[in-house]
Length: 197
Image 1 (cartoon, rainbow, N blue to C red):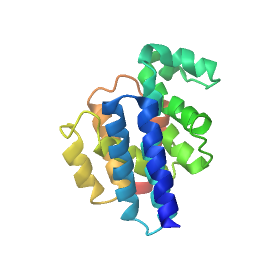
Image 2: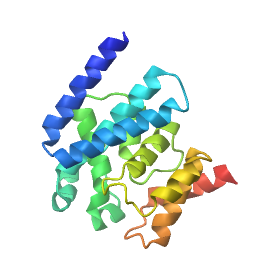
Image 3: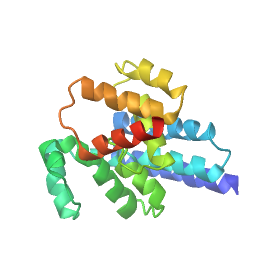
Image 4: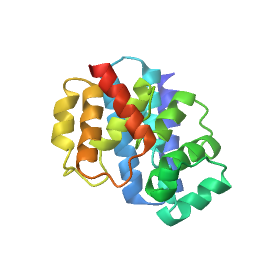
């Protein structure tokens, strides 16, 4: 059974690589998938949970195939509801486009996986453990390399728990002069503060 699942994941990896046709983006997606799987391994011995984390990580940035200047238009074509902040800063839209493509192109039906993909940049209120894991995996395996200015602080906070790491990152980017404060991010911040108080 494990071998069949591994084969399925191998095929999905190949399909994502072909779909993206962009080595840098593919390497980032694969790194996030592995990090998400590793974070999940520390919390559970469930193969299914590890597989969900890996798949969500692998597909989290596939919406990045569309350049920023096409994202509003693509979202409208796909009937994806956009917030004012997303129209203002289209970079953020890639998380919703990724969810759409995961569902429509890659035929992912697992709602937990789709949810984690959809909020991997901003998180959101009432987040699940998988949402949190993929959010953090994306920051740990930052596509700017290992020199992320928040990396060391995030990893230190991660030694406490996932919530502390997520709150550390959100506070860091807000203090660093966030271009647009996405409502989901601000709601997630409140939830994290409540959980940690």
